Length: 144
Image (cartoon, rainbow, N blue to C red; front, side):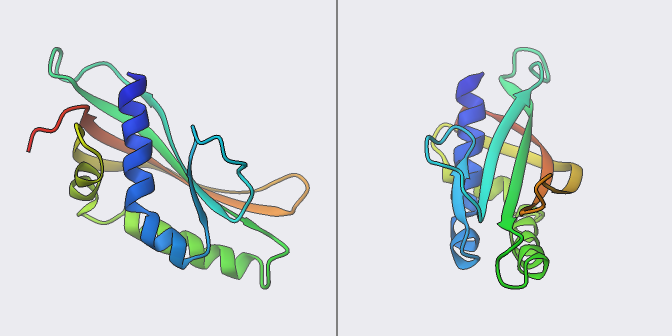
């Protein structure tokens, strides 16, 4: 199952590469060894449920994409909201499953759904974070 979660992270990272670069964000996965200093976007394959249907190899994977920005950056919250809008717009595209499927070998995403949107400001009030929680129905096989 770790293999499927890593493929989800890698596919999301690949799908967000262009927009992350345009927004000046480091584009990372949760399993990257790189120091995760902001501004960044981090893709994280959190968990997957049981096979659905049984013996199919298909799973609903919960994936979190978090955009972080420094509050001290220029106009702070305004810049952060622009970044969040750009990243989340890409993730809310009807084309996302096809984009993710094309991004990684031996991987296919059938559909996506939104589970939750969240905004937070860290306790030191130096960083803004917004997260989008996705339900990705996928498998660790190329079925195209």
